[in-house]
Image (cartoon, rainbow, N blue to C red; front, side, top):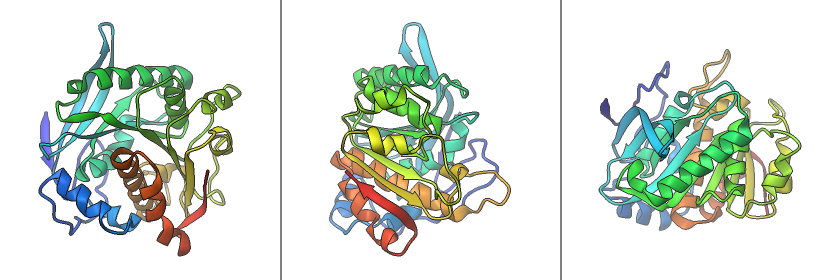
Length: 297
């Protein structure tokens, strides 16, 4: 089933987010890119939905090889031009539906999105290698997702142990422009070896470590040799790196902060090939305390 959406997406989520529609007017992806790159970067620009409608295609197989396929939900941005692709991978005991709002948000800003389902209890190294094969297949044949996908601009997004899988995929040579890791959690002793092999830019978006901490999160900044930037979201929990986070006491503000920082990061990596745009966009939020512990190497 195909649905065209503006502000909301059903996608199995329990409630719509309190997010408005941007005042930026753009008829084409080139116009939007030009506007954003010619104005001072500001992460708060990405709090609202972008200017483009999004078509949603749920439960669609993506053929990795003659014998392997991955089930995914597709969120396709309206412009006719070729556009980047953002691939979302869930964490432990979660599903592709947990990233529906994030995926549609990115697509509304001109980046096609794919939220994929892999075994949600791992093993995460195996999931990472599956992800690497998927990215390679899309790089060879972007029409596996949509003919408007620009296969040279694929960004990987992973939450929790899904971030470990994304790290494995990058280490195994997945042809991606970079990655955004959402409150990353480490899989164990073998992880540093994979992290040392990463040669693509990575942006780490973490929960507030005074509120919530994950296993081996420090490995990602420590062992990725370079091209890595990190910030934490004030008052955010591990679950806030999904949207919506259906947990007792959850509030939308940290989730919206995650999705806006994520969208800036994905735009930066896919449209410029570096973390520079996103890093500059975080500056005001770092100064006013909404983002914490910013560091970069």
